Length: 283
Image 1 (cartoon, rainbow, N blue to C red):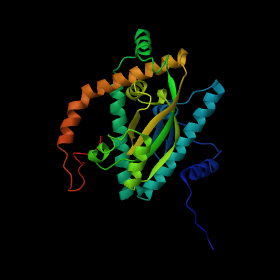
Image 2: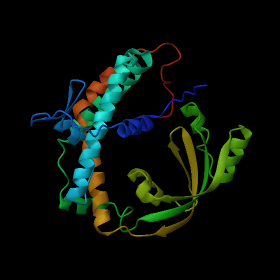
Image 3: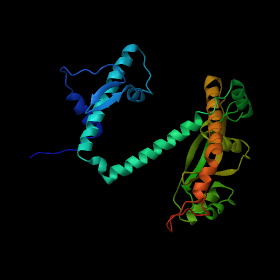
Image 4: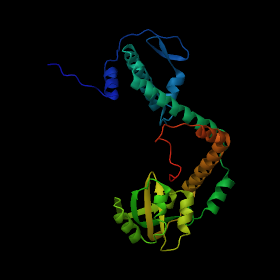
């Protein structure tokens, strides 16, 4: 009996590497084309793209990585040609995946195009950001929280039902009454990992205040049990501030460049009944 097994991509690629011929092969003239596979040129630009995120410790490491990357491109091209010969590029599932990948790539390139026009923050701006955000730097705090997490209600009215509740016990009782599943445990929150506005808001809260944080359709109800100040300083802190400033500048530039277009396009979207977003849905 012959047993057939579907190999994952890396296994097929390794098989191709194992079948690599060590005999003499026709040479290409010097130029942009580094190799030719089934009539298709593999160029220096393609190889550079494969190695774009790679850092080399030595020239020997670079040469080895270049050879491995080139052979990877050769293997991938051979396998892709075999797939095309079997007309797999005409399968509906492939067409859908290709469409999705193309749109993701276009969005990434749009983001990169906008970001490329934003200038890096200056040392003065970085120092100013650190000075005006002591809650992230000089007074950076790590909180120990009593935390309850539960699925967000389907609409804003359901979330408002929790506004009058003042204690974790009241929130827990409400969840029990509503038969809403929840988890109750201690958690840790470093303000560096939190949204800047959230970090500022927590720092201003009265000691016994309970606060809700929505994230990915989950509501986190929190009460601060303990707070420890651990200053964030030095080069890492300045790099953190530079990234925060750069992100804010890119966001502002994005709104200025395409905000109106996005708003107009959203207003023109038509939905099948039952699929439109609720007007009262929580943001």
